[in-house]
Image (cartoon, rainbow, N blue to C red; front, side, top):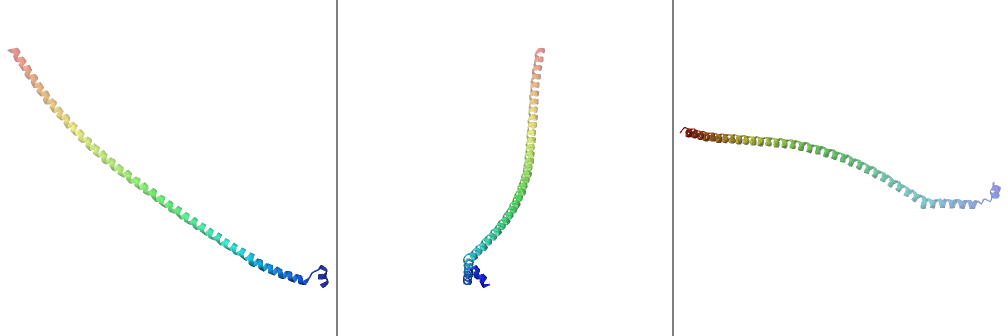
Length: 148
């Protein structure tokens, strides 16, 4: 086997030195490069996980806010409907009051007009009676003059 090793030109000292160099190089690369890269990857993974957790929390908060918004809008619509219904009832009551008041005033005006009409009728009747009496007196005077 020694001939074979010698035929290929393999030197045991050189191989041992190369193995030691390889182990030192691997140790140095592991210490200075592989470990920091792994640490950096772990930190990045943690940041990504934290970002995902924050995104989930933000989504949950958004959903809760949306639900609260819908609840508030539903309450506002119901309150607006209640206000509109109360306003309608108030308007109807006010309308009835105004109609009743207008009818009452109209009745008063009709009564005053009837009283004024009756008064005018009575006055016209008195005036016509007085006129008839005058005419009767004049006619009687004329008849008496003609007889005399």
